[in-house]
Length: 84
Image (cartoon, rainbow, N blue to C red; front, side):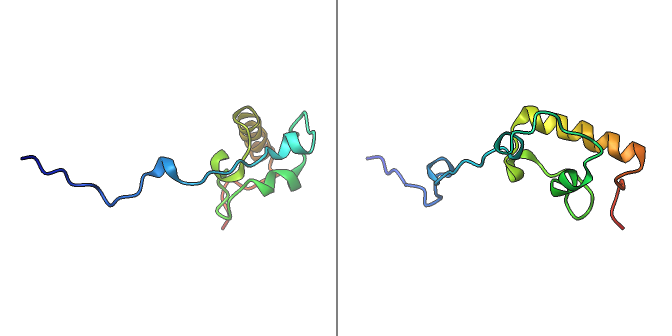
């Protein structure tokens, strides 16, 4: 006779999911400009790091554009590399 134990750990794939819309698609922004500091700062953590797309809901294509814009702004001195 074989005894099978069931796991009490919940299945992570059965959790309720929701979808966030991309900020740039929602506001019809085609070009992410490195000079627009107000928009770029929305996607930076308090430490100065770029927040991941899973947390912000940005599409992968726009996340790459955002990363480039933040890096250009940092190089030009518009954004700090770290918050201190």
